[in-house]
Length: 410
Image (cartoon, rainbow, N blue to C red; front, side):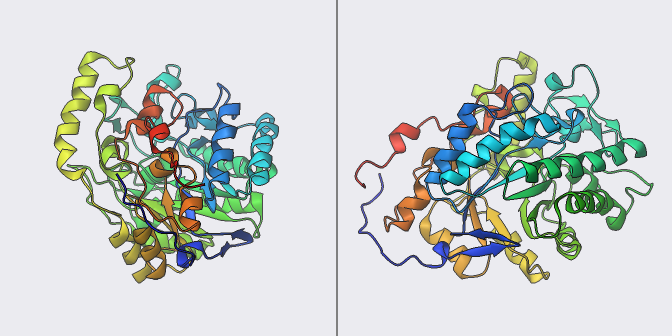
């Protein structure tokens, strides 16, 4: 149980405003992107998703970033994933952004291509596409190497999707190049074995992101905020150690990216890179075979020593990015549960915005509560049951949210 604290009326660095390109944010807290699993079969937002973002906006977060949003049908990774692959989706998303803005929120859409990490259930018998022919060690299937023509089509699709994001009233767009998904797989020498113009060294591995960025910028213009989510390393037991991709962040800045978020790790080790804490393998959906479930449990045992944490776990990487010359706003998430830790990250210059996902699922009004002077820690226990919605195609939610809702503060 949290100890009661007297309200503190001094806002402090966490509640100062910040501008990203032409986007003005009222504070430094952002809802970190997490796949909502609330879209319909065409990738359009449901009423439940609209209520989800309305509630978070009303809770006081300065910025919200959506979860994965596929730019074309071949890039869809999961059931119930967001889509921005066709013009017919614009009005549906515009209705959502209107509601978010009415609630005082600001929202950025993250656009992505799943690459080799696609759930085979959404592929309709086709093979996933990737930088190189590589296995997916979560779903146990092989991806097919992209042709140059297919790469060019994907670049076009990112640009067109970004144009739709702007038309739908989003306050910015984030290019997803992390987590082992397609753009990240081109950045990593572990998953990019190409020797043509799209691989072989750091410059050529970066080329896909560079051309995607230019397509997005052409579609949105110089005054529209373009974020990037950077892949800093794979962190597989037998793969590339982390972090090892700082130069890509500096290159993104040189291109003109307005803000950078980052993550470390790929889907196969999701429990230690995006959601440290509990490993609820037992709640994985029945769609997996008993043998596949046993495989997951075995992998979980291997990674258990890395899952524990006592506070923010990516701060060293954030400081290193800054040391390497990153000056655009840096968005940092991963393990923030305490007001003092979030405040220190901003005050020390470690980050420019602090992100939370699981705590805001449990307590959407946490930023408003902190702003009002009640600085008790988040009650999120990092059970991670919420993180498996992408596997089970169940809407993301906190299993214990009702218990966590503060009752003694007006």
